[in-house]
Amino acid sequence: MDEYYTVIQGLPAEIKTELMRLPSAKARTVQEIRLRLNQPLQFTIGGRLVPAYLFLPQATVLRRLTPGILQQCFLALCGHSAYAYEKELSCGYFTTDTGSRVGVAGLCAQDGFAVVRALNLRVARWVTCPLPSRVQQAVQRLEGGILVAGVPGSGKTTFLRSLIMELTRWDRIFCVVDERGELVPQSFTHEADAPDLNCDVYTRVDRAAGINMALRCMNPQAIVCDELGTAADASALEAGLASGVVFLASVHCDTPEHLYQKPQLARLLKTGAFSLAVFLSGRDKPGQVTRMVNLS
Image (tube, rainbow, N blue to C red):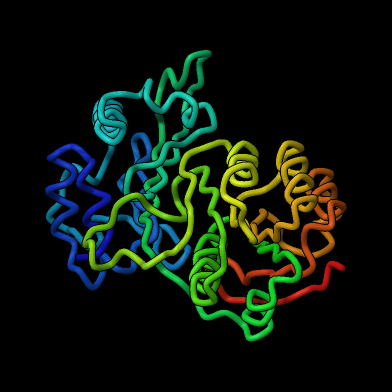
């Protein structure tokens, strides 16, 4: 059964019942489930928004999401315990146990969201992609870091998972710092689908703190993490370099030029942590490499 059906289990019964009727062939193409106030429920398919009722013509609730329905969806997805996700919600999201990120938008208050106006359920699937031979060789040698760059939805997480599998294949000692709980889900729809990963994973921990934990306690040869971009990240990378650790990480960036135009990214590059930058195509071809650039 596709992960789409797992994601919707957290929704209220009236929404879930209608969404469960989506044919499996179509469910496998759904990348996101978007719920917006006073709009129809929509799917992201191939990087484009599509109203769900086009595939579910008998559905009625999905045609217009009222404030009451949207609030019910939010509470159901967070298990009626929004306070348990207070830290994540302060950043505009929370992550389910299956690794699906739920983006939240609306009216913000001091202690969280006063009004929820939009939810975006990302359907997390354990998907990998082919690695270029140059990247495979870099992982095998592990002589320099790899920075994966792309716009949101370009498949950076997918590419990092492929790097994780490649590190496992070469029996490397490495750690994964999974701040958002998306790189390595805590549970799978079917246990048989769980990948055989011989590594140490820090889940839902501050990225810089997780890197420092790994350095102090696990003696890794490499550390994998996503969404770098803060001063604390740069400091943690510098500490890792001093310990001889190689980093494989991702950043939001679309071109090599922009790497140096963003102050925090420029600082990350100055650490010398990365010798190769891999740029991904975009939303329409997730995980596909368009360009590789030497950084050292």
